[in-house]
Structure formats: C-alpha cells, structure tokens
Image 1 (tube, rainbow, N blue to C red):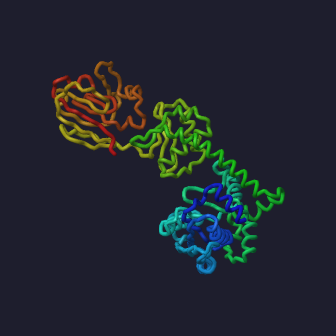
Image 2 (cartoon, rainbow, N blue to C red):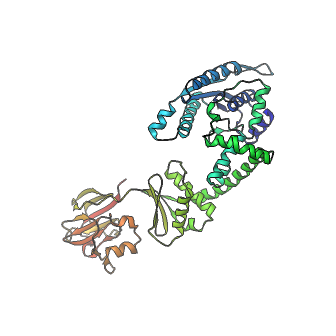
Image 3 (cartoon, rainbow, N blue to C red):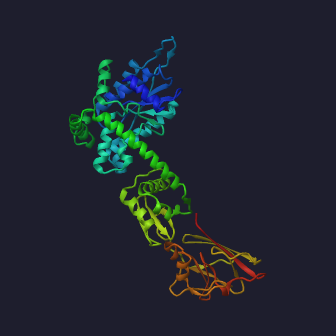
Length: 463
C-alpha cells in the first residue's frame, strides 16, 4: 500500500519535494493510516509533516477522548525519525482546535454536517498558516469517493459530480484516494496501530452511512472489484470535465465587467453547445458570487434559454439575490436591486445632485461645439433658465437635433435602453417641456449653439 500510495503521489505531484504538509487527523482509521504513511514516506519524498485535529464538541466525552488519543499517537508514533544515512527527521508537530458546532449551526440556521465541515476547514487553513504548510492532506479513500459519486448520482448530477472527489483542489490533497478501506484496515493491522471509532459512523440515519453499509457491499458482491473500477471511471470523468471546463473558461473570458455586474453577447452562449454554455454560465456566476458556483440546472437552463429567446428584455431571478437580464443582444447578470425611485426636484444651476441611482453634475460653460452625447450634453442657459429633474411620464416627447420628434418611450426602445432602466432615467424639464433625457441626450429646442452660454450636464450611475 505504501508503494502504490507513493506512486500515486509522484504521478500527480501531490507533494513536491520540499513541501510542508499539514495532515488532518480525526483519530479514525483512515486519518491514522494517512498520518503514519506520510510519516514514513518522508524517507522517499523529502517534505515537512505536521498534523492537526479539530474537536467539533458534538459527542461529549467521546470527542474529548479523541483529542487525548490523537495527542498520544502523535507523541508516541510520530517523534524524531532516524534516516538510513544517520540523519534525523524532526518530530511531527500537532495543532489542536475546537468549536461548538451545534451552537454555530443553530446560530446560522445550517445543518450540523455542513457547519462542521466549514468550521473544520477554516481551522485547518488557520493551522496551515501557523505551521507554514502549503498542503493540507485529508484521508479520503476510494470508498469515500465511491460514496460521494453514488450520492451525486442518486440526486442527479452532471460530470462534475460524477467525477467524485478530486485528488487535489487548491491546497487540499487526498493521497489515499485510490486506497480502499480494506487496505487501510490491513495496513493498521500489519503495523498494530490503534485508532478511534466514531459512534456516529454506525448511524444509518445519515445518508452517507446507508450508502456505505447497504449499497456498496451489494455492488461489490455483484461485481467484485467495483471500488477499483469506480476509481478509474471517476478519473476518466474528471479528465473530461477538465477539458469541457477549459473550453467554457475561454468562452466566459469574453464577458465584460459592467458597473452593475457582468455582461456578455447573448449569441455567444446561445450558439455554444449546451455542455460548454452551462459551464460558462456557472463560471460567470462564480465571479459574482465570490467563487461560489452552486447553481442548479433549472437556473442554468433558464439563463441559456434567455440567451436563445427573442425577448430583448426578459429576465430570470437567481440565487444570491441576483438576476440575469436580456438587454437586447447582451446578457447582463447583476445583483437583484429594484429600481431606486427618482425623486422629482430642482437641478442646482450650477451644482450637483444625487437622485435615485444617478449622480448629476451641472457646470456653467461656453459651448465650443463639443459632441452632444446621451450622458454628456450642453443645454442653452438662455432657453433653460430653470431645470427640474423627474422620471419619465406618459406623453413625454423628445426631438433630438437633426431628427424627427417622437415619444420618449419610443426613443428608449429604439436606442435599446434596458427596460429596467427606463422608469428611473432622469428627465430634465423646463417650463413643462422635456429639455433632455439621460441616455438619449438633449431636445433640439434646448440644445446649446456654438459660442453660447450653456449648462454642461453629465449623468453617471452612483458607484
């Protein structure tokens, strides 16, 4: 087992020479096997080894017993090690942590298993920093991998779930991932190594335990060698997933960061094969959600259909208080903030005004013929001696310089202003007439002429 484990580590470069590995040790059979094996593999692969144990405080005296056992095991079995050449390897240093998982789960409204995992990994990363470790080794075995794959299969999963547990993810490594639990038990028996049994592992009210005790033995009986073949199949599926994800990452890289969120040409996703498009969408959502890509197939399908549909203003509500919107030819993914109402009021001339989602500045300048743009324009100070700001109203009309007049609503549609913006865009009014509209520009009757005193108005979203 040690030899195959060493080969596996070398093939995947899980522990480059000179690394510092922090081994997570619960006191159970798998983690004791992993710690002991890594301790002896230091002779073949030069690396530094430390250990860490986290007390979840869920099993009373049994939890405290595990802490004492891990301390004794590390002290007695992982001390200074004499090499064949007479040199001495240092003892394994143990880092201990604890947390009230039950209390934290109740406080956050989360499940015990999810809370325990979050707190445990948070501790392991803190301990790794203290130790100066660049790798954290966990004792996931081939059995754990098979349980995970079967669980995902039962729930309905794509390639990512059916690939099971990755041998390495960021700083986490799983050196025992091709080792079966029977091989672990044989290893412990061979070296007469003690370990602790977690009583909760026998509780079949946990889904994973039922798969472990009831499903895998049946599959192994039907097809001996099931675990080994499952490990090989998972590796092939992970390889396919990596290839597809690389293609999706290239597609997602064509998105642009917007003031509100991310946008991408809808046609790029619509024309992509579903396996690529879905992964690209998941990657885009992960950018907005601080790396969290946990989005169900229902939402992914809805976003893809949004890109393929003809409705230029449709939208889909997403987790994390986000929304995906079609803005004509683009897909925009933004936080789900409702339109901030625009409060009608006078515009300081000159001066600045923040209203709704907008910051408006007004400066008194002489117009020198600069281009009039939808968000940066000049109004005649003579024609617009007094300006007020308000939202659009039914019946508003605008006649841009050199163009025919039509309703503001029709201009907004023609200029492809997103529907969610139309009711909150500032309309500049003078004497009951529309002088300008943010996103459309000035009306001909109020537009400044070259050499004339003007109000230089700029409109920008609030950051």
